[in-house]
Length: 476
Image (cartoon, rainbow, N blue to C red; front, top):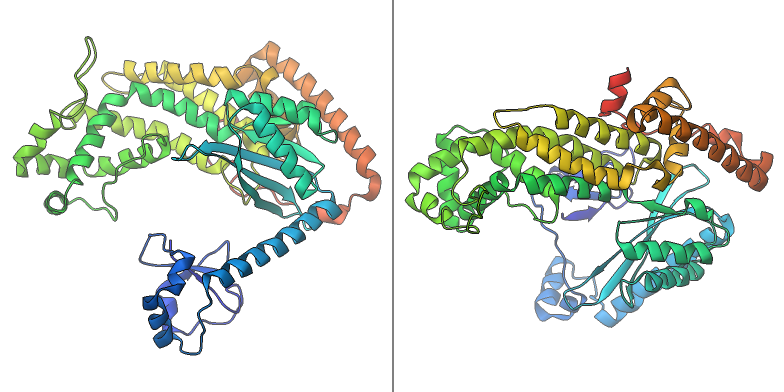
């Protein structure tokens, strides 16, 4: 996305009279930047480009009074700015002694180098949620001790002593990393330190369901690949869209196989063009022939994944799209960084439990067994991570209690007992109450009566925290 710096502050009340603003829209969350209204490409160039003759000739015409600096100068200035900003942020961490929540992730590049990103989340003195990517570094490997040692080194470098939670994915190495950090962080509440990423667990749950629906999905994906394989085919498809009188602002796009949310978007978009695909099959004789050769040979007692999408494929997609939509919205909500999410995690988990239970018992269409089997498989994955409340971070329950809309109301009690059963539910309520009292005692010792009441009153709950909650609508 091309962005433009808004000089003079985009959030001011002054009217923008320049015709340039017909082509740019100021970002709501960042009024100092604006987005181009036409392109969606990420534009940029290497610092070495500034030394090329073509760029210098361009700048000489565009802005004759501007002297283009060398890349050595730019590198020096960028590093100086980075070091100055880092010093300010480090001073903030040290002087404020804020409790920080960390999120971290690791991956391996194409050159087999291991990288780790570390993000710090905290609340400033004005009760605003702050998120900063404080490090993006090479690590020795993906082993738990290696990650733990790297985290320890970075926290010392930043002067961060108070850590509330460290959010990680489900990799087994992270268990070793968390065990290392519990020994290292003397000021942390070690029993609360490890937090599993909610969005990552939702991804694992949905991926298991997608395996059951692979045949319709793969046929539709192959059809999209075929149409987008050449400009000629794409132009013919656009004509078929017009002939079929399909009204849509966008066009078909292929998904990223490892990202289920992109698969949802692909299916949601493709379903709108069902008539266009049928029209295309009549216009291009190679369409059906080529697709019947695409894909693996069918195994015994399994459907054939080859060929163009069938009528039943589109029926499945329409039903499956409705099923995935709630997970898609839920993932977007829990991934937010500009509003509080922890207070609704328990409600979100109950939502998934409630929905999978409904689908496990409900026949959707002619062959509802596919959806029932899919929901059952997803529920097995759900139980692995959220089926035993003893394995869950207690902050999930405490944050729900602190939500003024929930507290320890009948909704909170009924939600837990319906999710985990009456016996386990009562045990959770008792342990959550004990943990909450214990945590309150720790904070009272730390802060006493010095907590500014006037600031606490300024806190605002998330406006969209429970707009799409199934479980809340059930009890209301």
